[in-house]
Image (cartoon, rainbow, N blue to C red):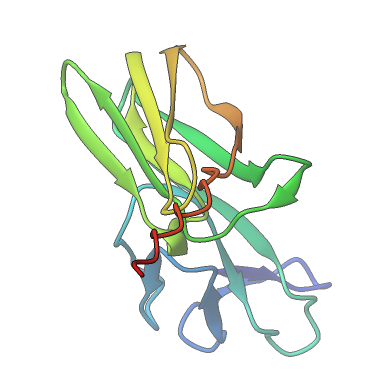
Length: 154
């Protein structure tokens, strides 16, 4: 972090700034960013002297790969937490865990996105991924039939 002062001078204040991040990455006191996951994240400094905190976007993704953000709701539009989300393509399978916010990455080309949750009908969607995408799923509950009553004996 280079600070420019009103007299025109500059100074490296990286070590004096308090650094933070939005997850998926870590940042050292010296400003070195280490990726823990693929995705879009933010690095920010927690005030250096009089400076306002600054959010710096950081994208961690292999060249030519993209992210598919999956929103899952149950019929009627109510958000449905805890669904398992996978993306399968010729290059392999990726899984979105709950902490990733439903983001499949890295993906590209023809991808089948599958959403599953106990008590709901699983659903697949075929996508051609050539850029970051957002895809919505609306899952239907599995209807259970009443159990047949057992015949009584006399």
